[in-house]
Length: 315
Ligand SMILES: Nc1ncnc2c1ncn2[C@@H]1O[C@H](COP(=O)(O)OP(=O)(O)OP(=O)(O)O)[C@@H](O)[C@H]1O
Image 1: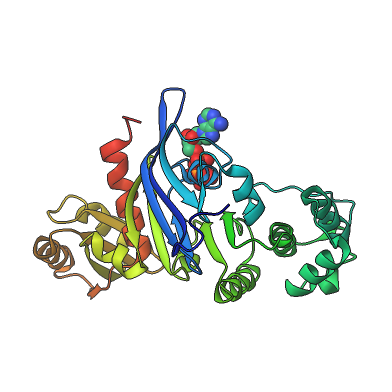
Image 2 (image 1 turned 120 degrees about the vertical axis):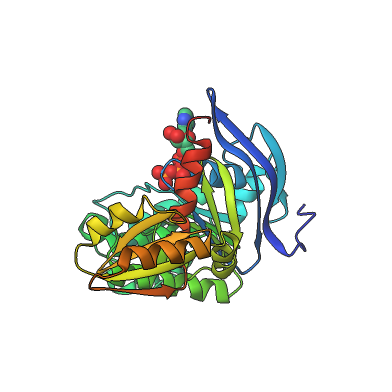
């Protein structure tokens, strides 16, 4: 019996910890994902995203911590969570020599779904796969494969999707189509937790969480995550940006320098010291420096670098 089904949260976990050997892979992570929300989970490789997702959906027991997923206890009711949530793993696999329909039919059998044929047909139609339904999975492009994987985890009509880097290696157009699909599902009330490394995808999420070295460093809307780091930023345009970057790194107030396209982004927590250093470095040169809004990518790089300094050696 789902005792907390009326909760406003699809996921509500508190103080999750997981060790592998002596490695503290997830460190006191608490997360809340509202129903109908697209929640982006970001962080560098190996930061603990997959492990956290697996604990939240009852596939992996935390060493400590409590919580619910769709109202079901993550420690005791994993079977109920599996019945009500769809999980798309990072390395999903299908039979290359079966068609989309045959692959989905196989998954539907594993779930023991009633009305299997009809469910598969309907899911194929809902996810825009009808034109490819009889194509062999091995002949599909990356984008269609992702869509088929999404269909596979939608067959049992889940209220929550946990998607682990669903668009890794997929071209921009296919990624955009996939996200249009996710937004359509969220609009129908399905909750989505999705891990990603792509900034354009992060900016399409209602809420974000950033994790590094197993610790949650920031959470909120994109604007809240940016504001939480209190960084100010400048962009400098002109020639010899690499040399300029070297010089700026030695000056006060400069916490981070990153070249983005034809501009050099310079960020720092001490706005006055940063401005002084930017002006000093640009003085007398054919450079244009303008104050810019700090972006999500600036903030993520900043958090990643700082967490490496703070926690990198002490997992
Ligand atoms: N079953 C396991 N046994 C031992 N170590 C593991 C196991 N699963 C994960 N790890 C380690 O735990 C750490 C976190 O891994 P996890 O896969 O959760 O990170 P991630 O943030 O999902 O990374 P990525 O973005 O690369 O997928 C890594 O150092 C990984 O090597």
